[in-house]
Image 1: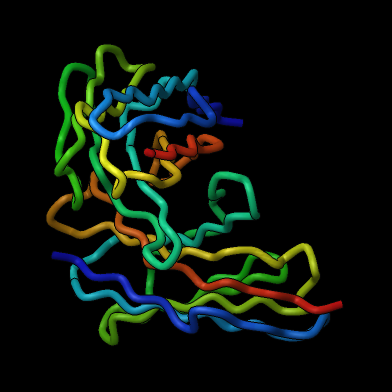
Image 2 (image 1 turned 90 degrees about the vertical axis):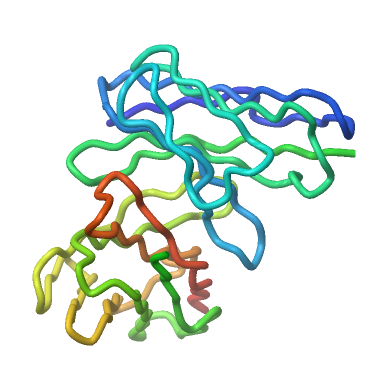
Length: 110
Length: 112
């Protein structure tokens, strides 16, 4: 079973602060993704990567940066957190078309 | 930009009943269709995939794809309370096979 672990699982941040969400996968998958889940919006793609040291913008990249320093690790960075970025964030890795999701990181920005 | 729309938003079926979930997409060249299921407090998990027009059956679950009509559906036979979850349709556009776009989901409630 593919393993994708996210940290932290829950975080409270202040407006204007910096937040880093981390994702680690142990299955040698090339593709990794960051999604955001909000009630009424489903899962929206923020950034993705298909190789280390390279990231691509998804559908809602504004206010987010991504970093893929190695095949196993993919981070999502909020340089200046805003209230509108309160959501649950999911990381996923992918092989042969199937996505394997982590358990999510709940971010609350106050 | 690829659009993926799911209906209904919410669905209530009795235990043992049939649940039918619908998904439409905007790009006729889309090549990759999956259904994911998410139980409360967990990450989504892949349920099944379909790549060719027609039906694909896996146990109580049947997926149907019609690319010409831009339509994919999921039918759950003999629904169980444990099937109560949020179901997502996921589509990958032909022009960028790396990108995976999800619909907003259908909340399924199976009443005992």
